[in-house]
Length: 244
Image (cartoon, rainbow, N blue to C red):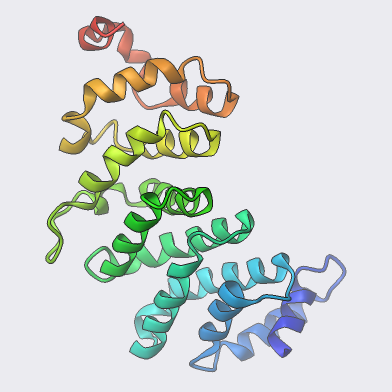
């Protein structure tokens, strides 16, 4: 209750932010403080979405600075609480969870969080829009920050993560939901320059999907088509024009 009261004050425009910061710094001295934050983000039913988001964003900042020094039990608890929220019903909560997941992934990588890869894979194959969108949002944020981390061999996995995700991303080019088309194209845009084998081998499918998205009804999707890295150079690319 105390943490919620502080977070409510924190998001209030008329509050004493200096005093609130001191209170949050005091709470941060307790080893399990971040457990409370992830609990609020993931299970804070009855609390406003703004408070739950504030808990998630504070958690994100704390993880950057202190995750490696947290007790292993707290590390595992935070990981386990985030995964069921990938497909949260509220888009703002899904987005915040995706942000926290991306930051944590940068710290531990695929090998340190095999369960994340499995959860994302299950969400993509669920055919539930909230779960698919939540998974794609998290993957997009990971691709923005550390795209190379998905293109590595991982002990215990039969395929590199990008090899599993790429076919689903390409399928989402044809999704009836603009959010999935936008997120999938945004993810693949991060790989144009580095060109992993998963994308190289699917180049025909990628280009065919790109031509369709040029006329997408969503302005946000069309913007990503023309803003993708290297698009302007395609006018000199024989392979590109041979597909038109």
